[in-house]
Length: 120
Length: 421
Image (cartoon, rainbow over all chains, first blue to last red; front, side):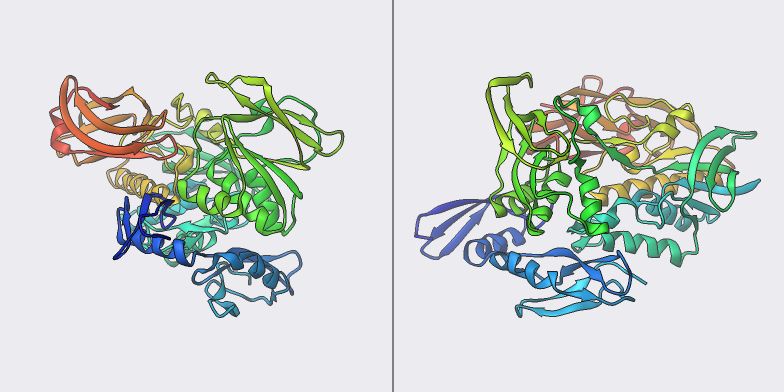
């Protein structure tokens, strides 16, 4: 962003969804409209390197018709969401699997994929 | 006959939280009855994150949130039955309630309960209830049905999708289907504002360049066997279709995310009157219905924005039910009952009435407004006398508001009204 440039954002950290105004100044990005510090962090990241947590399901290869819900245990680059879905479409897991188990380590070196449900 | 202190109808987030709260308040003889194969309710198919920020201080997915409560139920050794359907609730001698249920193991059986907590949740508004004109082909799903297909069964309901309604489930499904390779063409919203959370518009629609058309609806569904397309049209301020401003959009699938309706057949059968707006029971601050010892909480009472609020409400109902049982199936002596009046943009309040006792505790009143309004004040009055005024930057129909009324204010009040000005 150029100095003096302003962008309107909506914070996605929590259900409040604060309307943020981010203005580039000589001393860096100035964020207003946030009700907590996470809003400022979000605006900075969103304008430089936006990230998202990905949730999906993986097939359980030894339980017919069963799927286990999974998530990245931290945010990954927003632009890599589709690539991540492609990688994970090839991944299956073996039961038993329980909430918190790492089912795919180091997705693009950004986060691990962990189970969010249990299949006995 | 089977006898229990408390029977809880429904083992979703409300039922589990109510069971845990009642147990922790000292009434431990509880039975939770759930019709699905396991506890957890609809959260099991809500694989996205965003749950639990208020309750657990961290962001969880639906299955994780459900697991935490399920584990709390199991850790306490609270009894529950799954694959069991409650058929009716009637009243027996000495203030008891007779819950009739059935399952494949026991057939039809009855349970005598001292207190009952209704936690049946809600269901989605269907095409039939929306009266969408046109053909009746396959390919029209509620968003929750599509969610179950994809997340539980691992099957995609279609490829080219139009979504009607911008409730949170519709937005979440727009993202989910896009990530799974579908082409979500447009989300139409009848109202001039979205019914979903801002964050979901950003991360489910804007992130994937899915257009949101406000003041638009599906005017007609086309297709012989399978959906082939829809006519979407703009609506005027009275929500009537403007035929001149319509267009044809090709698609094979339609998802409906047009609101949720509390599932209250059992409640009605139990002779409990419902609120016309919430479509849930009329309750007091303990979430007690007009029948002594029958409570309701969660989405069966009114549709909540967040499961965290469902858990909070279920705590109240669970604790109150435990107390009622410990008190010999009697409520504490009440000085008076105050009806909470809604004024201006306030569409409904929960509770609708407050039973005031001598040592009245503070009461949190939840309410929803009927329009998006900016720079307003939430005002609580006793008759003409102003008790509280809270300034708000913005209120919206999609976001539940609360005011906490002090116990001593209630003791001194005769008529409580809540308004947005």
